[in-house]
Image (cartoon, rainbow, N blue to C red; front, side):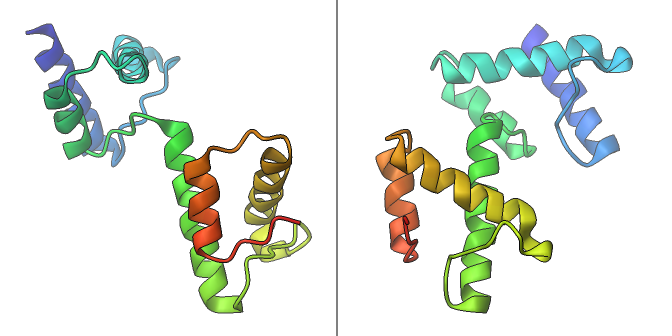
Length: 131
């Protein structure tokens, strides 16, 4: 019952703000921010039911912000490649500074063996150059 009340509060927050990223230190929504964080923790621990995951997804709640950010950057890289014919985004490219930094981070993670095989596969699929 409490979960549904919090979910409805989150739905209202989304309707008012256009997103579900409730800051944990937001004085007006402190308990909602903490609740949202608990949902992410439960998701990471695999203890969030598929029904609740579905409900949260239905309003655009981001369960894994790091995964979401990676996918957003990957999508941007795909657009860059479509426009330029390659994936070598320079960190000095004024219009793509953050994407260039992200590309550099992927290469460094790969060299340190810290990039998952899924991500390596995704990057390989678009002709990513590792060095």
